[in-house]
Image 1 (cartoon, rainbow, N blue to C red):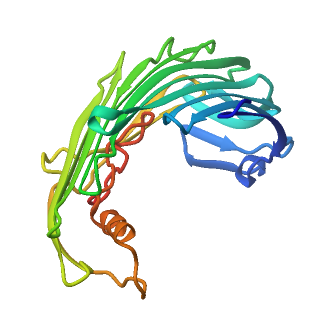
Image 2: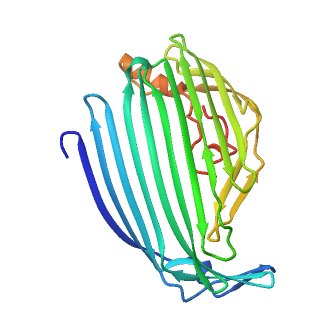
Length: 330
């Protein structure tokens, strides 16, 4: 499509098979108030997927634009059939039609020359409709997610590197099932920043900070800030040795949690205790390739060694800051 653009359209079809647990006609009564049994009559589900994609990349002025739209329709979707009898739930699995999913994405990128950086703007939308059965009635949970984000990434030099980012997503849910919550809406925000500095003498410093905020309309939300930093020195003739002091979770707020939205429009939040602030001193000796490398490639290799991970979070709820319970991001 012209000198800088190209498009792609494709359709794919396939099948999803039920798991052994979903097929076995064996009663699981380990929980006396929640009985589960498989259904040997389950059929395979049929997937229909399609994608429409357009990419424009102008190499002359470094502008780019991406548009992507996709859909997913599933026939014989493997869902749950729940019967609640005097406080005891009996669950089995059935095939239902009506599963739908649609998503759209737009991304625009352009250079910011006066600070030698690149700026990316993203907007996205997702629609999902999931069938299930409760007390003999078939219903649907519908989800609409609206989101966007922006990233400013530097291209100053091999000695200075920084990234600023912000992501936001808002999800609306509704259900036609009698036992389901009328609405479970939530807002997720995750700004972050990353900075890496390197001197010609081998000293380096890197730090990253990310803020996570998950706010539910009808329940208590979760928020925390994760801040890491490190300082070190590369030495010896070819800078192949490195001594680094790192500190993880400077603010002592590291958190790990996950959120799931089931077929009955109920949100379950699970919080896990994780390791918080600690310090670490490391010595690293890198075995490099034999032979000579030009100056620019050698500097690029050194830059890749000392630069820290992004660690700026982002994504949909349940991410736990991108690295739940993880170690240093550098």
